[in-house]
Length: 138
Image (tube, rainbow, N blue to C red):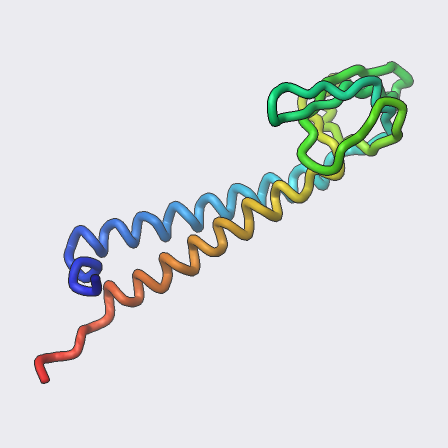
């Protein structure tokens, strides 16, 4: 195994995996930080929609100008039944909501971050193995 990793192709692939994992981890962290900076509001769940294994919720919340916003958002965290209160984060540009998410969907970023972190550490180990000098003949 070590010989195949030390080949030119092995070094290239392990370097490519490391670069991809680091870029992916950066994107996940940036997205999480950006979403945390969005405005938030209390919302009421109007209905819970289940389609196969995925679920989404139809919510209603008020914007700062007093207008009501109704949206259907993906439910990645805990289950919310109709009538429950949830916190929603939204990105407001020029008076319009351009993106929104339930505030308890942060665990998606944790899962992706941990997975990409493990891949990055594994590929860092593979790169160290690929680029270090092997022992000479004994």
